[in-house]
Image 1 (cartoon, rainbow, N blue to C red):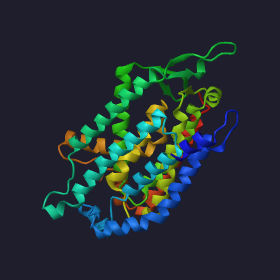
Image 2: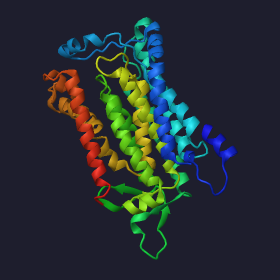
Image 3: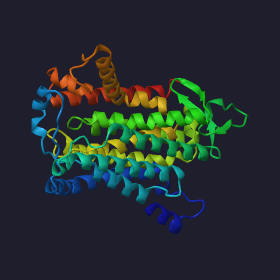
Image 4: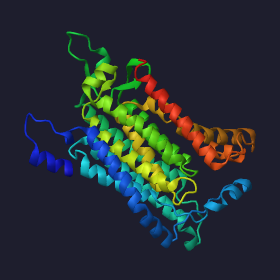
Length: 386
């Protein structure tokens, strides 16, 4: 809204204004979310405590229950403030006429509602005398897949008229190669990419949206782990989004240029500022947890940005920690069924395995942050290795 007001009343043809640059507005969004998080979170924590929305971690593992005993009744659903600040900063500072901004808000609200319902059912189950399981896994998957289908359909339809510039194929003295934006999947180290059709694009979108959302949710199991890893991941994607959304930069670095996607840098800035501000209160010992209310939409937004910018495979590198966490659960479940009850890890997700192996919780979190930073550095290295 603020961007629209400035553009409508102060814009003159031929002049350049700082607010037109998405990097400038992304910086403002990050600072706004960080400062507002520091100011508002203590009030949110008091309200969550007042409403008795405290966590009660329960694992099918007695030693781990003992290790996490001090987390009982720590207020959960702090992710509601993350969602509110991201939405507010995007509404204020982003171009609301941009198709990709509107779709990002749809993603945020959709998964935010899903996560909030799941958290509410779990945290209020004792009052109703019900199980603390919350929504069933198939119910969550149904809504996540549904979101992937909706976003995939509209994004692909928009891409049929929003032609991308295949920068790697531009040669001096020739016209740039124009193709539908979502008929190409960018591949790290390979400058031409892989051509896709509508069906494969939909499959990739659903897998990325569902997988990333659940992977961040699985990582949210220790003080500061998910928020720190999300911050590092989204910082890389802010840079990748700016590259893909800026034709000159994309051409120079041999990236596929997708017009209008540069505005999503503002969303990345808002996620980064909110995650760092939340980490202030979520670091060990945590005063608040984000819950599914925060982790599901944060993961979904990262997946959405990866799809829109055609960097789904780069997400496997940038979000390496999330991939490891998700794979550890898949390996544990598969091995358990294959062997008739044996465990591959002490417990999954894998951060709990290391906790039970003798690492303290702060050691585990910081070491996973370091691994996440190395994955981010590896992703940066691929920018020039094409």
